[in-house]
Image 1 (cartoon, rainbow, N blue to C red):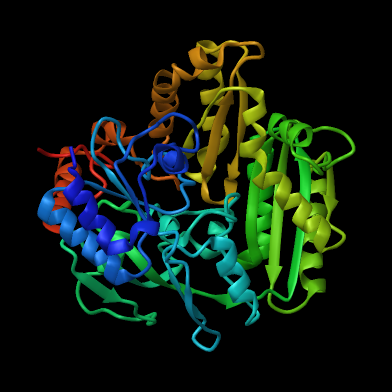
Image 2: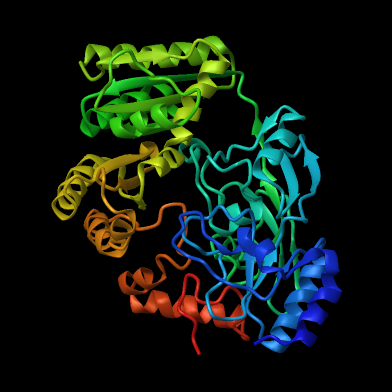
Length: 474
């Protein structure tokens, strides 16, 4: 157990007002978003500067105190949640939320790790730029967490994930040393790329405290359409048409099952059915152009005209204004929370080669329905980059706890199908606690050993987010 004297030493670093020890006040820091994990902590520390983070980690290394870095606590694999029965201290970056610089000439923005994604969007808008990462949780997700999980979002097709959207980092190492890698260069071949080690490491190698993010010109033209189709195979053919017609202007291509749209219309205020007649599947097509609105309109129209001529699309609608464009995206981004009122949901964040999506969905559906008759499969996601959120809502009237108790059994079967299609069991959410043991089972021993060697080199005391991503070596 951490003794009172050590707690006092941590308190002296951040100040009494920035340490949370009362159990009632710790609730929002110790639960994961899906209700699968609940941890405990002797203290939540909320540093206000990189120097304070460094002092915390130095003390933690000297005393062997486990540290769990946490951003907005919006992660889906419990990588940000302390363990149960141990003395994990939560290190919240919420106070380190300054946007240090916005540079429209260099098209970069420098933000501290606790900056909320929506605030970064707003700062970019002040100089007529965009930061393209878009998530349903962007009102609370923090950029440090986005980097630590290598978040993807809805615009990966055009802009890439967080690894592609970051030029440099400031990181505090477990020893308390500070690496100032806040470089703004697009070309820099000077040794190992340390930045890429920390992006996606889920706080197991150090604490990201600031980042240099890429900005992009605000598109002059933007258009969104929703089309109804018979099946994912038709959606894949439509994706081919959209790619050929739009080229790099295609910024989003989202696949949605009918039941996901139904849940969203039913449970999310203000969401309306996108088409006059329900369809088995829907796609959302997003096009952004640098020249004019007419250009975006013309591309979307051409895509749908060709799709109609090929008898791929039963019905479609093109947004008539920015309000409608936002409404279409709001429907898509609300699909995950819309499942909650329907009871327990077993969720998967997987990716397969784009061409394999129809086969994967057909095989997974057959397997799941055989295991859980009456299950309601709510598949949706970023078809353009192969990332499908394969979510399964409990049968109507089923016991939620009993259904969720089968999480690993069902996931093992779904993930086996993913691997058969040369896919990944984690496309954009990370590994955390939820998929740690599965990662060890599916990766080659040499890969796990190399990861463990990197972990040992950066964190010899073993204090950084222990038992996340990798099993802690004793």
